[in-house]
Image (cartoon, rainbow, N blue to C red):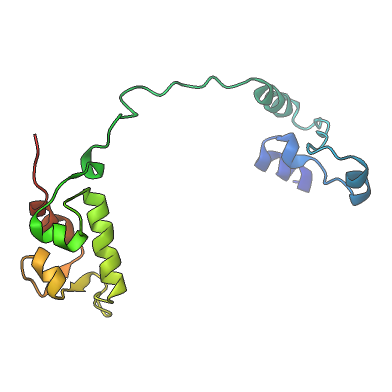
Length: 155
């Protein structure tokens, strides 16, 4: 198998990828941004024609359904009131679950509270003990479970 037929097989006849690079003299004389397409080779005329016809047709764009674009945040992005202990830690009376977890992780990283030998363990200082039921160590998968009681359900 020759080099050009391998390239045709890999790039499936895409003319932009198979076109030779313009020389520096030709590039300086011609300020066009688009390189001239190469002529389709005789080895694979069907793929070159299919690629050029696929480039010419504009694709129909789908309109986003009203269901896929909610008008207000929901789930973990929904801002809800939090318990006094978590509000003191976050310095805000309400927060979304994702923001609370982000702020807790930034606090953990800032104060170097991760166990260096087991990165999945977090050592709790007094601030973290107030929101993590007074535990000395917390697994990183426990954080979400321990935080769930701090979010007050609203109807």
